[in-house]
Image 1 (cartoon, helix red, strand yellow):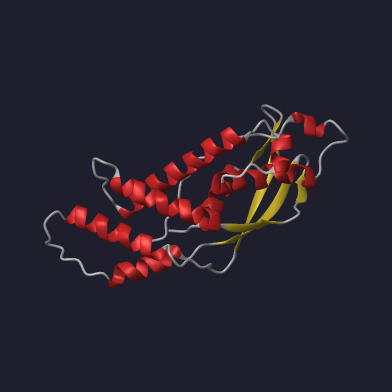
Image 2 (tube, rainbow, N blue to C red):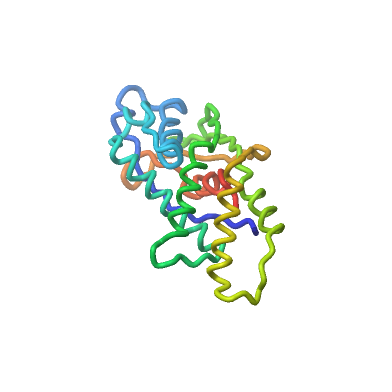
Length: 209
């Protein structure tokens, strides 16, 4: 499968509360929980303790965000694989079930960070991409499909999703990838936010396809 850049919206657009700046300004350590908490919520469905202290997020909100991420991932993947769902939503349900198993296995590390400029901190996020799509590609290459088969779209979807389910049973990690992410104070509303483009690159590398 060709590598594409997933276009995932910032499903967790929670900004750090201004109260964090009340006592003597901020540091890279103060701001880091926004980046860490955003990743934990979107991919592990976990409300990070430090994140909860510095934001308005709660368990219910994180659960909603996690499900939204799964929904967007499923749609993105189906579009990339050119899979048409059936009326019962069978293939989307099977694909989402696979990603629900993969998400807890996603791994990353966030460096301590450094001040880049006033009210802007840069962090190196080390990502350990899952190799599931490499295994999927190998399984698809081995599969044999008659291009003239009746209901080719259905046969393709069944073969593809079956290969995905098999590939997900034995997942490993590829070489780590480093991405620089910034967290900065948005001058328009004076709240701390993450760099949406960099976060999108992180999302794309966790499970690359």
